[in-house]
Amino acid sequence: MPETLSLAAARRTALAAQGFGSAHPARVSPASLHAVMRRVGVLQIDSVNVFSRSHYMPFFSRLGAYDTTMLDRLAFGSHASYTEYWAHVATVIPTADWGLWRFRMDEYAPRVSARDPWAQANQQTLDWVRAELAQRGPSRPAEIEQDAATGPRGPWWDWSATKRALERLFLAGEVAIAGRRGFERRYALASDVIPAEVLAAPVPRADAIRELTARGLAFHGVATAADIADYHRLSRAEVLAALRDLEDTGIAVPVRVEGWERNGRPLPAWIHRDARVPRKVSAAALLTPFDPVVWFRDRTERLFGVEYRIEIYTPEPRRRYGYYSLPMLIDDQLVARVDLKADRARSELLVQSAWWDGEPRPAVVERIADELRRAATWKGLERISVGRWGDAADAVADALALHPEHRGRHDRGTR
Image (cartoon, rainbow, N blue to C red; front, top):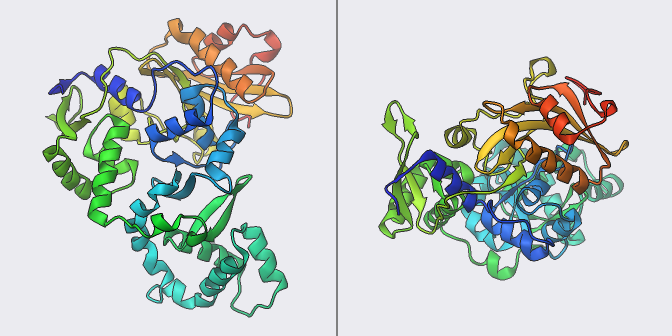
Protein backbone atom coordinates (compact mmCIF):
# COMPACT_ATOMS: atom_id res chain seq x y z
CA MET A 1 0.00 0.00 0.00
CA PRO A 2 1.27 3.52 -0.74
CA GLU A 3 2.41 5.64 2.21
CA THR A 4 1.13 8.78 0.47
CA LEU A 5 -1.81 9.31 -1.86
CA SER A 6 -2.39 12.31 -4.06
CA LEU A 7 -5.79 13.94 -3.60
CA ALA A 8 -6.82 12.72 -7.08
CA ALA A 9 -5.81 9.16 -6.19
CA ALA A 10 -7.82 9.40 -2.95
CA ARG A 11 -10.89 10.51 -4.94
CA ARG A 12 -10.53 7.60 -7.35
CA THR A 13 -10.05 5.18 -4.46
CA ALA A 14 -13.18 6.49 -2.72
CA LEU A 15 -15.29 6.30 -5.88
CA ALA A 16 -14.09 2.81 -6.77
CA ALA A 17 -14.93 1.64 -3.24
CA GLN A 18 -18.46 2.99 -3.75
CA GLY A 19 -18.93 1.12 -7.02
CA PHE A 20 -18.22 3.84 -9.58
CA GLY A 21 -16.08 3.37 -12.66
CA SER A 22 -17.72 0.29 -14.19
CA ALA A 23 -19.95 0.31 -17.25
CA HIS A 24 -23.68 0.12 -16.57
CA PRO A 25 -25.04 -3.40 -17.04
CA ALA A 26 -27.14 -4.11 -20.12
CA ARG A 27 -29.91 -5.32 -17.78
CA VAL A 28 -30.25 -4.50 -14.10
CA SER A 29 -31.14 -7.63 -12.16
CA PRO A 30 -31.78 -8.29 -8.46
CA ALA A 31 -28.16 -9.44 -8.26
CA SER A 32 -27.10 -5.99 -9.51
CA LEU A 33 -29.04 -4.31 -6.70
CA HIS A 34 -27.62 -6.65 -4.08
CA ALA A 35 -24.12 -5.85 -5.38
CA VAL A 36 -24.69 -2.12 -4.88
CA MET A 37 -25.95 -2.78 -1.34
CA ARG A 38 -22.74 -4.66 -0.60
CA ARG A 39 -20.80 -1.58 -1.76
CA VAL A 40 -22.74 0.98 0.28
CA GLY A 41 -23.73 -1.17 3.26
CA VAL A 42 -26.67 0.97 4.35
CA LEU A 43 -29.24 2.84 2.27
CA GLN A 44 -30.52 6.16 3.63
CA ILE A 45 -34.28 6.72 3.41
CA ASP A 46 -35.77 10.16 2.94
CA SER A 47 -39.35 11.19 2.25
CA VAL A 48 -38.64 14.03 -0.21
CA ASN A 49 -40.01 13.03 -3.62
CA VAL A 50 -39.58 16.19 -5.69
CA PHE A 51 -37.53 14.23 -8.25
CA SER A 52 -37.03 10.75 -6.82
CA ARG A 53 -37.06 9.32 -3.33
CA SER A 54 -33.48 9.19 -2.11
CA HIS A 55 -33.21 5.44 -1.58
CA TYR A 56 -33.81 4.80 -5.30
CA MET A 57 -31.01 7.10 -6.40
CA PRO A 58 -27.77 5.27 -5.43
CA PHE A 59 -28.77 2.38 -7.70
CA PHE A 60 -29.55 4.71 -10.61
CA SER A 61 -26.23 6.51 -10.02
CA ARG A 62 -24.25 3.28 -10.21
CA LEU A 63 -26.31 1.10 -12.57
CA GLY A 64 -28.34 3.44 -14.77
CA ALA A 65 -32.08 3.14 -15.35
CA TYR A 66 -33.82 0.25 -13.58
CA ASP A 67 -37.26 -0.80 -12.42
CA THR A 68 -37.74 0.62 -8.91
CA THR A 69 -40.45 -1.94 -8.14
CA MET A 70 -37.65 -4.51 -8.16
CA LEU A 71 -35.96 -2.63 -5.33
CA ASP A 72 -39.30 -2.31 -3.52
CA ARG A 73 -39.67 -6.10 -3.57
CA LEU A 74 -36.10 -6.66 -2.37
CA ALA A 75 -36.07 -3.99 0.34
CA PHE A 76 -39.69 -3.75 1.48
CA GLY A 77 -41.40 -6.99 0.46
CA SER A 78 -42.89 -9.40 2.97
CA HIS A 79 -39.97 -11.82 2.56
CA ALA A 80 -37.25 -9.23 2.03
CA SER A 81 -33.55 -9.76 2.68
CA TYR A 82 -33.51 -6.30 4.21
CA THR A 83 -35.13 -4.44 7.04
CA GLU A 84 -34.63 -0.99 8.54
CA TYR A 85 -32.75 0.45 11.44
CA TRP A 86 -31.03 3.64 12.61
CA ALA A 87 -27.66 2.63 11.12
CA HIS A 88 -26.70 6.08 9.84
CA VAL A 89 -30.01 7.80 10.18
CA ALA A 90 -33.12 5.95 8.96
CA THR A 91 -31.64 3.31 6.67
CA VAL A 92 -32.26 0.01 4.95
CA ILE A 93 -29.90 -2.67 6.28
CA PRO A 94 -29.42 -6.38 5.57
CA THR A 95 -31.64 -8.38 7.91
CA ALA A 96 -28.62 -10.54 8.72
CA ASP A 97 -26.97 -7.47 10.31
CA TRP A 98 -29.67 -6.99 12.97
CA GLY A 99 -27.46 -8.41 15.72
CA LEU A 100 -24.68 -6.01 14.76
CA TRP A 101 -26.88 -3.16 16.01
CA ARG A 102 -27.78 -4.72 19.34
CA PHE A 103 -25.45 -2.29 21.12
CA ARG A 104 -27.41 0.66 19.73
CA MET A 105 -30.73 -0.96 20.58
CA ASP A 106 -29.46 -1.44 24.14
CA GLU A 107 -28.68 2.28 24.27
CA TYR A 108 -32.30 3.03 23.35
CA ALA A 109 -33.80 0.34 25.61
CA PRO A 110 -34.16 2.65 28.65
CA ARG A 111 -36.62 4.72 26.59
CA VAL A 112 -39.20 1.94 26.92
CA SER A 113 -38.46 1.09 30.55
CA ALA A 114 -39.92 2.50 33.74
CA ARG A 115 -36.70 4.50 34.19
CA ASP A 116 -37.78 6.87 31.42
CA PRO A 117 -40.36 9.49 32.48
CA TRP A 118 -42.29 9.28 29.19
CA ALA A 119 -42.33 5.48 29.24
CA GLN A 120 -43.37 5.44 32.87
CA ALA A 121 -46.33 7.70 32.07
CA ASN A 122 -47.24 5.67 28.97
CA GLN A 123 -46.70 2.05 30.01
CA GLN A 124 -50.29 1.21 29.07
CA THR A 125 -49.65 2.49 25.57
CA LEU A 126 -46.42 0.51 25.24
CA ASP A 127 -48.06 -2.67 26.55
CA TRP A 128 -51.09 -2.19 24.29
CA VAL A 129 -48.88 -1.74 21.20
CA ARG A 130 -46.90 -4.88 22.06
CA ALA A 131 -50.14 -6.86 22.50
CA GLU A 132 -51.67 -5.42 19.33
CA LEU A 133 -48.65 -6.44 17.22
CA ALA A 134 -48.57 -9.88 18.83
CA GLN A 135 -52.22 -10.38 17.86
CA ARG A 136 -52.25 -8.70 14.45
CA GLY A 137 -48.77 -9.45 13.13
CA PRO A 138 -47.18 -6.93 10.74
CA SER A 139 -49.38 -3.83 10.63
CA ARG A 140 -49.49 -0.34 9.25
CA PRO A 141 -49.94 2.46 11.79
CA ALA A 142 -53.34 3.24 10.23
CA GLU A 143 -54.49 -0.30 11.02
CA ILE A 144 -53.36 0.01 14.62
CA GLU A 145 -55.12 3.37 14.80
CA GLN A 146 -58.32 1.80 13.49
CA ASP A 147 -58.21 -0.93 16.14
CA ALA A 148 -57.64 1.66 18.83
CA ALA A 149 -60.50 3.82 17.56
CA THR A 150 -63.06 1.00 17.37
CA GLY A 151 -61.99 -1.22 20.24
CA PRO A 152 -62.13 -0.72 23.98
CA ARG A 153 -59.82 1.99 25.18
CA GLY A 154 -59.31 4.08 28.23
CA PRO A 155 -58.49 7.72 28.86
CA TRP A 156 -54.79 6.83 28.59
CA TRP A 157 -54.98 6.29 24.81
CA ASP A 158 -53.61 8.93 22.47
CA TRP A 159 -52.65 8.33 18.83
CA SER A 160 -49.53 10.51 18.96
CA ALA A 161 -48.44 8.54 22.03
CA THR A 162 -49.05 5.31 20.12
CA LYS A 163 -46.83 6.46 17.27
CA ARG A 164 -44.14 7.43 19.75
CA ALA A 165 -44.46 4.01 21.36
CA LEU A 166 -43.97 2.27 17.99
CA GLU A 167 -40.86 4.31 17.25
CA ARG A 168 -39.39 3.79 20.71
CA LEU A 169 -39.98 0.04 20.54
CA PHE A 170 -38.39 0.03 17.08
CA LEU A 171 -35.27 1.86 18.27
CA ALA A 172 -35.02 -0.49 21.26
CA GLY A 173 -35.16 -3.54 18.98
CA GLU A 174 -38.46 -4.95 20.25
CA VAL A 175 -40.20 -3.96 17.02
CA ALA A 176 -38.85 -4.27 13.49
CA ILE A 177 -39.97 -2.90 10.14
CA ALA A 178 -41.69 -5.60 8.08
CA GLY A 179 -41.59 -3.65 4.81
CA ARG A 180 -43.57 -0.72 3.50
CA ARG A 181 -46.80 -0.12 1.66
CA GLY A 182 -46.03 2.82 -0.57
CA PHE A 183 -43.93 4.87 1.80
CA GLU A 184 -45.84 3.80 4.94
CA ARG A 185 -44.01 1.45 7.27
CA ARG A 186 -45.38 -1.88 8.46
CA TYR A 187 -44.40 -2.57 12.07
CA ALA A 188 -44.11 -6.00 13.69
CA LEU A 189 -42.58 -7.65 16.69
CA ALA A 190 -38.92 -8.28 15.89
CA SER A 191 -39.51 -12.02 16.31
CA ASP A 192 -41.95 -11.89 13.37
CA VAL A 193 -39.41 -10.26 11.05
CA ILE A 194 -35.89 -11.22 12.07
CA PRO A 195 -34.86 -14.88 11.75
CA ALA A 196 -34.57 -16.63 15.09
CA GLU A 197 -30.90 -17.47 14.53
CA VAL A 198 -30.13 -13.77 13.96
CA LEU A 199 -32.08 -12.66 17.03
CA ALA A 200 -30.23 -15.26 19.07
CA ALA A 201 -26.80 -13.95 18.04
CA PRO A 202 -26.35 -10.37 19.26
CA VAL A 203 -22.86 -9.02 18.60
CA PRO A 204 -21.00 -7.68 21.66
CA ARG A 205 -20.47 -3.93 21.53
CA ALA A 206 -16.67 -3.96 21.09
CA ASP A 207 -16.91 -6.54 18.30
CA ALA A 208 -19.70 -4.60 16.59
CA ILE A 209 -17.74 -1.32 16.70
CA ARG A 210 -14.70 -3.04 15.27
CA GLU A 211 -16.70 -4.66 12.46
CA LEU A 212 -18.52 -1.44 11.63
CA THR A 213 -15.24 0.47 11.62
CA ALA A 214 -13.74 -2.05 9.22
CA ARG A 215 -16.82 -1.81 7.01
CA GLY A 216 -16.84 1.97 7.11
CA LEU A 217 -13.24 2.03 5.94
CA ALA A 218 -13.99 -0.50 3.20
CA PHE A 219 -17.02 1.50 2.01
CA HIS A 220 -14.89 4.67 1.89
CA GLY A 221 -11.70 3.05 0.56
CA VAL A 222 -9.59 5.75 2.22
CA ALA A 223 -10.81 7.77 5.17
CA THR A 224 -10.16 9.68 8.36
CA ALA A 225 -11.54 8.52 11.70
CA ALA A 226 -14.22 11.23 11.44
CA ASP A 227 -15.29 9.91 8.02
CA ILE A 228 -15.62 6.39 9.39
CA ALA A 229 -17.43 7.53 12.54
CA ASP A 230 -19.99 9.42 10.46
CA TYR A 231 -20.76 6.44 8.20
CA HIS A 232 -22.51 4.51 10.98
CA ARG A 233 -22.76 7.40 13.47
CA LEU A 234 -20.24 5.91 15.88
CA SER A 235 -18.18 7.51 18.60
CA ARG A 236 -14.92 8.85 17.16
CA ALA A 237 -13.02 7.64 20.23
CA GLU A 238 -14.33 4.10 19.75
CA VAL A 239 -13.50 4.25 16.03
CA LEU A 240 -9.92 5.30 16.81
CA ALA A 241 -9.56 2.40 19.26
CA ALA A 242 -10.95 -0.01 16.64
CA LEU A 243 -8.58 1.38 14.01
CA ARG A 244 -5.61 0.56 16.23
CA ASP A 245 -6.80 -3.05 16.36
CA LEU A 246 -7.39 -3.06 12.60
CA GLU A 247 -3.88 -1.71 12.03
CA ASP A 248 -2.46 -4.62 14.04
CA THR A 249 -4.24 -7.10 11.78
CA GLY A 250 -3.28 -5.26 8.59
CA ILE A 251 -6.85 -4.36 7.61
CA ALA A 252 -6.38 -0.61 8.12
CA VAL A 253 -3.16 0.80 6.66
CA PRO A 254 -2.09 4.32 7.71
CA VAL A 255 -1.71 6.67 4.76
CA ARG A 256 -1.14 10.37 4.15
CA VAL A 257 -3.46 12.09 1.68
CA GLU A 258 -1.98 15.21 0.12
CA GLY A 259 -4.05 18.23 1.06
CA TRP A 260 -5.81 16.60 4.01
CA GLU A 261 -4.56 18.90 6.73
CA ARG A 262 -5.78 20.72 9.80
CA ASN A 263 -3.94 23.62 11.38
CA GLY A 264 -1.00 22.93 9.09
CA ARG A 265 -0.70 19.28 10.15
CA PRO A 266 -1.60 16.17 8.13
CA LEU A 267 -4.91 14.58 9.09
CA PRO A 268 -4.41 10.94 10.11
CA ALA A 269 -5.98 8.69 7.48
CA TRP A 270 -6.21 5.00 6.64
CA ILE A 271 -6.70 2.97 3.49
CA HIS A 272 -8.36 -0.43 3.51
CA ARG A 273 -5.97 -3.22 2.61
CA ASP A 274 -8.31 -4.39 -0.18
CA ALA A 275 -8.94 -0.93 -1.62
CA ARG A 276 -8.25 -0.36 -5.30
CA VAL A 277 -6.41 2.77 -6.40
CA PRO A 278 -7.44 2.95 -10.07
CA ARG A 279 -5.53 5.10 -12.53
CA LYS A 280 -8.77 6.65 -13.69
CA VAL A 281 -12.48 6.52 -12.99
CA SER A 282 -14.91 6.90 -15.87
CA ALA A 283 -18.31 7.88 -14.52
CA ALA A 284 -21.24 10.19 -15.16
CA ALA A 285 -23.86 10.22 -12.43
CA LEU A 286 -26.44 12.29 -10.64
CA LEU A 287 -26.09 11.80 -6.89
CA THR A 288 -28.72 12.10 -4.22
CA PRO A 289 -27.77 14.49 -1.39
CA PHE A 290 -27.88 11.36 0.80
CA ASP A 291 -25.44 9.26 -1.23
CA PRO A 292 -22.53 8.05 0.93
CA VAL A 293 -20.16 9.79 -1.49
CA VAL A 294 -21.42 13.21 -0.33
CA TRP A 295 -23.47 12.72 2.85
CA PHE A 296 -20.60 13.78 5.18
CA ARG A 297 -20.07 17.36 4.06
CA ASP A 298 -16.61 17.78 5.61
CA ARG A 299 -15.35 14.78 3.62
CA THR A 300 -17.00 16.12 0.44
CA GLU A 301 -15.04 19.35 0.80
CA ARG A 302 -11.76 17.52 1.46
CA LEU A 303 -12.19 15.07 -1.43
CA PHE A 304 -13.75 17.25 -4.09
CA GLY A 305 -13.09 20.83 -3.02
CA VAL A 306 -16.85 21.46 -3.12
CA GLU A 307 -18.93 23.01 -0.36
CA TYR A 308 -22.24 21.21 -0.69
CA ARG A 309 -25.40 21.71 1.34
CA ILE A 310 -29.02 20.97 0.58
CA GLU A 311 -31.36 23.89 1.03
CA ILE A 312 -34.65 22.16 1.87
CA TYR A 313 -34.76 23.91 5.23
CA THR A 314 -33.33 27.21 3.99
CA PRO A 315 -35.98 29.93 3.57
CA GLU A 316 -36.66 30.38 -0.14
CA PRO A 317 -35.23 33.92 -0.45
CA ARG A 318 -31.94 32.72 1.03
CA ARG A 319 -31.50 29.67 -1.21
CA ARG A 320 -28.45 29.93 -3.39
CA TYR A 321 -28.78 26.80 -5.54
CA GLY A 322 -32.34 25.54 -5.12
CA TYR A 323 -34.58 23.39 -2.99
CA TYR A 324 -33.04 19.98 -3.71
CA SER A 325 -29.93 20.30 -5.85
CA LEU A 326 -28.26 17.08 -6.95
CA PRO A 327 -24.47 16.90 -7.38
CA MET A 328 -23.28 15.87 -10.84
CA LEU A 329 -20.29 13.51 -10.85
CA ILE A 330 -18.20 13.38 -14.02
CA ASP A 331 -15.28 10.96 -13.78
CA ASP A 332 -13.67 11.78 -10.42
CA GLN A 333 -14.97 15.34 -10.01
CA LEU A 334 -18.16 16.97 -8.79
CA VAL A 335 -18.53 19.42 -11.65
CA ALA A 336 -22.02 20.87 -11.24
CA ARG A 337 -25.30 20.69 -9.36
CA VAL A 338 -28.83 20.72 -10.73
CA ASP A 339 -32.12 21.34 -8.93
CA LEU A 340 -34.52 18.82 -10.46
CA LYS A 341 -38.25 18.39 -10.22
CA ALA A 342 -40.37 15.73 -11.90
CA ASP A 343 -43.54 17.41 -13.17
CA ARG A 344 -45.46 14.18 -13.54
CA ALA A 345 -48.70 15.83 -14.67
CA ARG A 346 -46.92 17.46 -17.63
CA SER A 347 -44.49 14.54 -18.13
CA GLU A 348 -41.62 16.98 -17.88
CA LEU A 349 -38.29 17.02 -16.07
CA LEU A 350 -37.75 20.55 -14.78
CA VAL A 351 -34.13 21.60 -14.43
CA GLN A 352 -34.99 24.46 -12.11
CA SER A 353 -31.40 25.60 -11.73
CA ALA A 354 -27.98 24.49 -12.95
CA TRP A 355 -24.69 25.61 -11.47
CA TRP A 356 -21.04 24.88 -12.06
CA ASP A 357 -19.00 23.80 -9.07
CA GLY A 358 -15.75 25.66 -9.54
CA GLU A 359 -14.79 26.83 -12.99
CA PRO A 360 -17.16 26.20 -15.92
CA ARG A 361 -16.35 22.98 -17.75
CA PRO A 362 -17.84 23.26 -21.25
CA ALA A 363 -16.07 20.05 -22.27
CA VAL A 364 -18.34 17.96 -20.01
CA VAL A 365 -21.69 19.66 -20.62
CA GLU A 366 -22.72 17.08 -23.23
CA ARG A 367 -22.22 14.34 -20.65
CA ILE A 368 -24.34 16.29 -18.18
CA ALA A 369 -27.06 16.59 -20.82
CA ASP A 370 -26.88 12.83 -21.49
CA GLU A 371 -27.33 12.14 -17.79
CA LEU A 372 -30.35 14.42 -17.63
CA ARG A 373 -31.89 12.62 -20.61
CA ARG A 374 -31.25 9.31 -18.86
CA ALA A 375 -32.88 10.64 -15.69
CA ALA A 376 -35.96 11.80 -17.59
CA THR A 377 -36.31 8.44 -19.31
CA TRP A 378 -35.89 6.59 -16.02
CA LYS A 379 -38.74 8.61 -14.49
CA GLY A 380 -40.93 8.15 -17.58
CA LEU A 381 -40.88 11.86 -18.46
CA GLU A 382 -41.18 12.86 -22.09
CA ARG A 383 -39.65 16.33 -22.05
CA ILE A 384 -36.94 18.37 -20.32
CA SER A 385 -37.03 22.09 -19.67
CA VAL A 386 -34.29 24.27 -18.21
CA GLY A 387 -34.94 27.38 -16.14
CA ARG A 388 -32.95 30.62 -16.13
CA TRP A 389 -31.41 30.29 -12.68
CA GLY A 390 -27.71 29.36 -12.44
CA ASP A 391 -24.45 29.99 -14.25
CA ALA A 392 -24.62 26.61 -16.03
CA ALA A 393 -28.26 26.89 -17.15
CA ASP A 394 -27.59 28.25 -20.65
CA ALA A 395 -24.85 25.71 -21.36
CA VAL A 396 -27.08 22.83 -20.23
CA ALA A 397 -30.01 24.08 -22.30
CA ASP A 398 -27.77 24.43 -25.37
CA ALA A 399 -26.40 20.90 -24.91
CA LEU A 400 -29.95 19.57 -24.67
CA ALA A 401 -30.74 21.51 -27.88
CA LEU A 402 -34.00 22.65 -26.37
CA HIS A 403 -36.68 24.40 -28.34
CA PRO A 404 -37.21 27.98 -27.02
CA GLU A 405 -40.51 26.97 -25.37
CA HIS A 406 -38.59 24.65 -23.05
CA ARG A 407 -36.04 27.27 -22.00
CA GLY A 408 -36.51 29.74 -19.21
CA ARG A 409 -40.08 28.71 -18.45
CA HIS A 410 -39.45 28.53 -14.71
CA ASP A 411 -37.07 30.51 -12.59
CA ARG A 412 -36.06 30.96 -8.98
CA GLY A 413 -38.65 29.92 -6.46
CA THR A 414 -40.80 27.71 -8.72
CA ARG A 415 -41.71 24.44 -6.98
